[in-house]
Image (cartoon, rainbow, N blue to C red; front, side, top):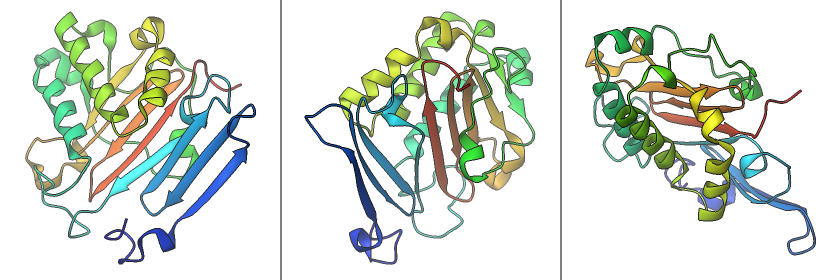
Length: 214
């Protein structure tokens, strides 16, 4: 936080409490540049973390170095995702590798479509069991920075039915250094979205629910 806010750190952040801890539904929110953290006391039924999450990191220069993003605390998530891509065969890669990712556009960035088909990328049904297991590891890595209780709740919402409806996509027109290490990727289903934009540095969005919003 000190790095991302020109050393202002916590002074440049805000917190909010909704409800009263220990007295029914509550939520704690901490927000600032490159961070939205929620501690969710089941404040919103069927929504992991109480709603969408955003986090990011700029390690060093605004335009981070291609391939390794040295010092970026979230790049391990992209490394795991790229491992999943390397497991794909030629036909699978044609489905998974696309041109242009979604735009970052406020709350529209994390809008859930409710679609089970025609989502970007390769559907889980096209993957072998070991490939599917690796995608689960990618999701686990994305949830790793959060409280164990909240991460476990999110995983439960991505139940077997929803997991089967997920699609995974990688985007080549945001490839830093044109090195084939995909800096931008996403996992999307009817009521779940993980969007990782690692160009020019990391911005990540997570929105997981038990069902699409009406």
